[in-house]
Image (cartoon, rainbow, N blue to C red; front, top):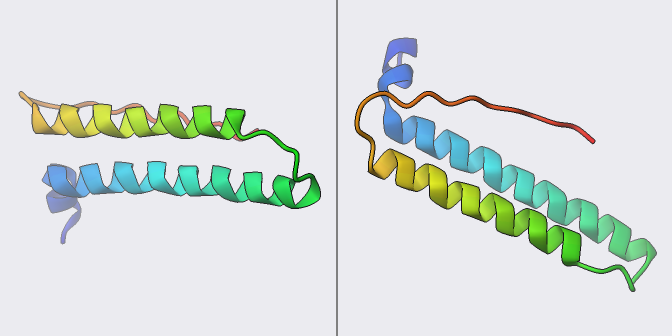
Length: 81
């Protein structure tokens, strides 16, 4: 696939975005498990909120691509804590 084909392939863009979110969810889960190994009393509240928020974003992005009317501009903001 050439660069121009990738830029115009909405399915590729959607899959890429969803994969990035899934990877982030898995990263949060791994971080939680590392902390849980140290302290079995740790609460899942923060993790559950993060996963819920990211799952909502996945649905929002999927719906955006399904109902696309014209050009979709995506701004990506990556934060490291």
